[in-house]
Image 1 (tube, rainbow, N blue to C red):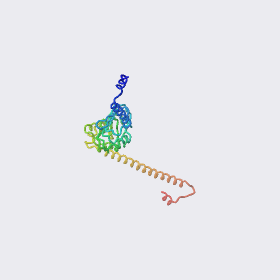
Image 2 (cartoon, rainbow, N blue to C red; image 1 turned 45 degrees about the vertical axis):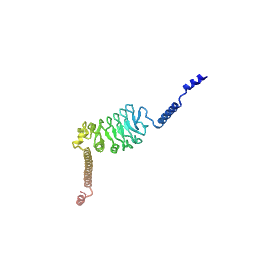
Image 3 (cartoon, rainbow, N blue to C red; image 1 turned 90 degrees about the vertical axis):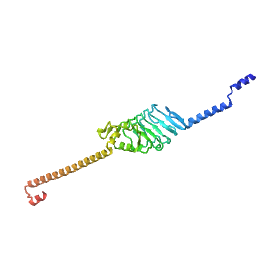
Length: 261
């Protein structure tokens, strides 16, 4: 009997160990309930700084369940094609966003709304971006990487670059794939601007020429109509005179003819 009691006591877990196990289970359960990590991503927390790592995860869009306390967000090397409005509005603690090496073509004007104050780095390099709304970037304090995109160089892009903080190490890799003037295609945008070219002036000149052509076309149309109207009236007048002359029993006074003419 004593041996059975001793055996049972040997297999009974120590009270302290049992309490620690329950505490760990409870902590894990609460952590899972309060902080979720997007599928195909890894979430880490070191010294109170949360990082969400979703690199090369075959993502086609930005996850919507990113933890609110995220400070570092890695979304590089995926298949993301767009950054919609208010994508990061609930992530006020974000300091770095890496969207490089995706297939981004469209960035909405309020895409980075809510993260303007604390963001330090925004990497958009290596995408398919041709144009970007001025409002999407001008309010950011972050350093921005825009290299290796098929940019269309025109006035809006020039204005954007003049108001944002560009990464000095990659700024020379911002190249015009196309341009409002074909001779600048394939050239680094910074070199073009440094040479004194102003795309906004080019745009204004193009607009002025188009307006002049339109006004000239309308003027030509009005003149043509007036000429046609005058000639048509002259022909009608001649026909009327010929008709009056052809009447056998009526003589038309010379004064009447001169008045008609």
